[in-house]
Length: 115
Length: 114
Image (cartoon, rainbow over all chains, first blue to last red):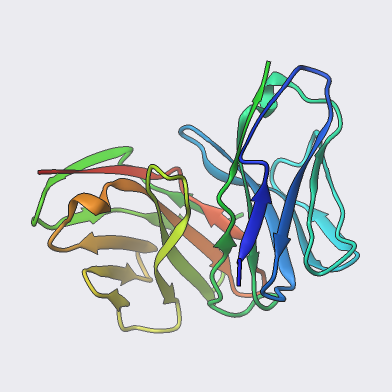
């Protein structure tokens, strides 16, 4: 049972480049989400999904796209990277769709630097 | 909109002592859940403790306990017998009753001194 797996762990991009951060979970969780962590700002929600085929925007969605074609996978796409997207990104999932104390299970994070 | 506030950016405690990290939140919901997560230098996010708003009893997990004051919208974390391995960033988080979205505070960096 691997939990939530994120790849890559580190990435450096030039401004304007595109990339996809991968996230997969093997716990059959319906809910998946992406956060970014910046110093002094905690973790902020980018996008989330309550099931395959369903995605929605979080607090800071601009510049990011997501899709959820399967229950297991929830990739995050940066179409044209900007220095403001330099951050640590976390994928997280949880059981159930709300109304419970199920915690979020986190991946190990991706440190992205955009130059 | 819900907000979570952690007013202590950094704290320090001596090994074996007790320390309390503060967290306040704002919500109009009556049913919700509160969490404390720990993030050591490894960057991993680890669940420390959780509390259901409908429970009056404060949650406890070994050396970690909370003081949940629903009327004051306060959710502090007490760490007893602090250990060097407790050195980490601690995040308080709120989840409304009908959603899985977790809203985080800005974190408190705790340093345990030998």
